[in-house]
Length: 301
Image 1 (cartoon, rainbow, N blue to C red):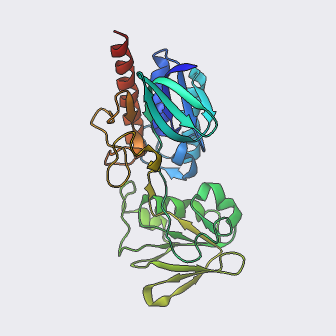
Image 2 (image 1 turned 45 degrees about the vertical axis):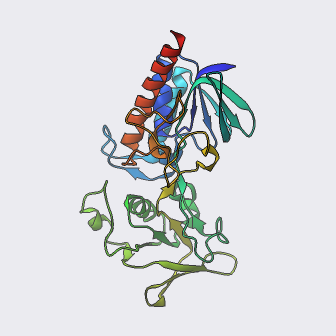
Image 3 (image 1 turned 135 degrees about the vertical axis):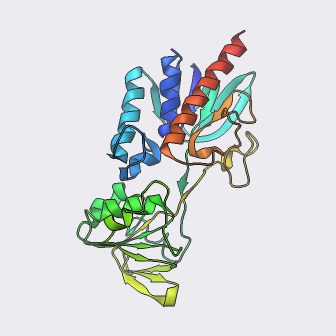
């Protein structure tokens, strides 16, 4: 089947693009390899998305997905591995199948960065996690550490302190680097110990996480779990040679979400947009869909 628009990624950017494209009465397919809702579905409380004083990330993600689904957007679970352009028809090559469309929107998002320290990979699934809402329940009444210095670290700590016996934050900076939270968030974290100017040197245990070793004076912290929240990176290696990427792997876009391949657009965290927030993901999703619709109309003339 030839779709009008294929959207790769079902996070806020991709789902917004799908809503806009489907409302224009186009045949739309969304390809997603993981959770519908993307990264938002894995975070705790969201306080900076307009229209909601606060809302759980999973609830917001479900709202995006439900709206697109109700409009008739088609979804498929698959992983993109290549992008081809043949006689103005774009081919989204995935592990299970190849899908064709007149235009493509890349809303691939990003994936969690790793600490790259001893013990991290060994204990993934046995105490090391990158998703508090996915795994937090496994640490009920246990001691955990959150590694990170930004909004994600704070959101994770606030979520986990209602589940766990104790929560600490390990920050490599002398202060937290916050954008979405007001300074009074520290009051809400009063029962969360924060280790400033500290880096994780190693994660130690026998069959599961038992201790985190810090480089600051070789201090050790007894914990049952470690939640890593040190940012994200794009998964775009397979796009090299198809669309232009910057030195960090993000897809180069102009102000209207155009990539270097005509008829292919990028939006949300995978693009070179500077501010990586839910609101900017949704706004660029709307722009990408509008530009894709304009492209299709131009090709039909």
